[in-house]
Length: 450
Ligand code: ADP
Image (cartoon, rainbow, N blue to C red; front, top):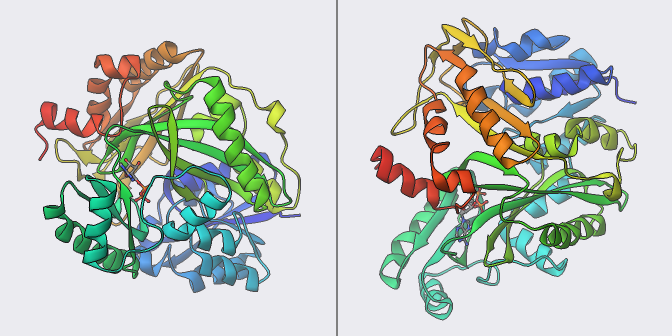
């Protein structure tokens, strides 16, 4: 049995994990950099350990410091949250070598899915439909041009190690191929230390639909439907909803079963997300994230389950607390990401919060580590909160989001809240008629974003 968990993260996701621990009667250990000494996750955990200076490479990414913190506090397991070390196979190996439990998938699954080329090959072999593209890596510009001509432009060149929207470049024609190819390789090299790239057909108007999966590591796996995360800026999600407004129950059951069967087949353990582009009724796999996602609360809302609790259960060797038949959708949920950023350019806006008031009431969940007087440090990402609303149907969820956004007070820094107020007045958002390019176009027209 696990009775103490170290949370190797910060911000709202660290609180999220600490909350699940507390409800399960498990002790929690927070780790923090010197810049986060006054952070809410440090206050809320049962114990805390300072693991280094402000830069995350010397603190939240410092594997020796995190292992040492486990040894000092007697924590038996590590929950990585998302980002930082959550998809680092080498770290998982080290954790296990120290007889600690990593709350997440195996090092091998992380390795396979972390390399997008291997992930695609694996998924194809498991019967999951993929975006048409090169078979494996593309090593020369000549080969890239040949493939471009064969597939037809536009195409997208992607770094196999890429993530967070980095290492992806679109080529609209052969003339653009050289630049796109070289830039994707260079970004792969500089951000991920790997310049291998591959090519895919660039879909013109897809939606981003992702399937939440969950496995017990013993050959049992379920799906928890989809999330539509098409509203993106620079390939980064800003607004997510479940169920997807364009997905029918039959389509959900079909693609969900393909995903759950694939996960059962590989004995996947824990939470995972299989991401697809969806166009003209067809799903095309793009990548798998082997961790909890930022947007997991919309799934929790409609299924009434606690995904972090399930992660901890299966890490302990217990079965999942639900089967596929237990999982039925109740209503509609929407999440908006509240970033400390200044519009129209979304430039980071760290600083002191002079006043904070979280919205409440029926169907409202605010996941945030903010408090009155908190200073947002400039060293980390700009997500300061997630507002999640749940209603009996989509119109009710939209009305609730509007109401809750109106109650939220974050003074002292600029945030992305005005963006959501504006979006809620748009017909396409009200009817759910948008794709992955909708937001970029809207921003260009309405905010004159460069
Ligand atoms: P990352 O790992 O950086 O998040 P993904 O492969 O998940 O990269 O892609 C992120 C986003 O990029 C997708 O949600 C979609 O908006 C866009 N994208 C990726 N592949 C394609 C494609 N083949 N055609 C069109 N858009 C794509």
